[in-house]
Image (tube, rainbow, N blue to C red; front, top):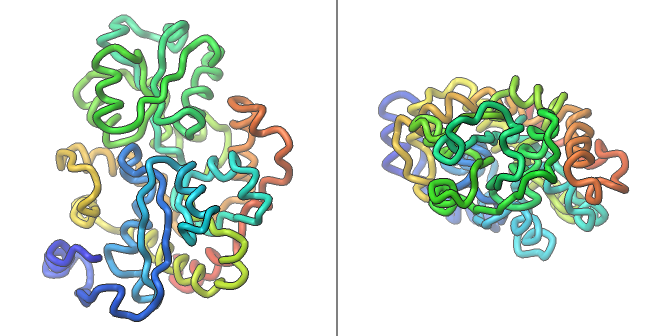
Length: 345
């Protein structure tokens, strides 16, 4: 449902055109269920999807979208596989970690972000004299979940510094208050997480950032190539039998991506869903400014992106990556290309 007062306020200010405040269900279309991986740990990862819903871009395409929140990407992907959701929004890496989904024909059809949007920060309370990642040997490093993209980012950062990931203990700390408590109590000495938490800790001077994929430059330096972050995935049945619906969803997301290119930061904060974390306004603005360049401008997918992510998996989770062939086949470009032409994105 639209946040009517927020959107009408934006319209009055000239930030967005006036919108019809009608429930999506009134359009008479069967809702499309999209299982969304956690957004509390990564506030902006699926921002394009949220914007498309908040600004009624989906209704303009004659499709009603219901976003189902799940605690992890794995849970979101599983919901789609089991038929409890029609599509899912997850990090692309999670698709590579799900051979059953790939074997069943699930494909990424539109890209939201070009970076993991995670940062590795070292606690200055636990390690006040920290200078290099060598100082993390025999220490505990918190990640959102074992096998998550934050886990991969932490492993790559350590390897790049010449530190074996096996020399540290990774701890799944969850998100929000749980992750913060793990760092504050000394349960972990470092944390690889997303915003708003990392932006808040950085501003407070609680952590020293040792690796950062919240920018394109930082992502390129760590991964050595283009990386896919948040994306939308569809099962084979949707791609075949309900292709027009998938195209409508793609149109909404690509339109939101185009809107993001010129929207002012204050406009972004105003249209955040009510269910998103209530962070301080200044922290949210600073966090958005940092990740803004990482959003895809048009939803299209670089052909070499899957290979970059697969290389990272070979380095950090070889048992998972073994046997994966032709990762570029996990992409379906037609939907995003059509939307790009339509909106001149």
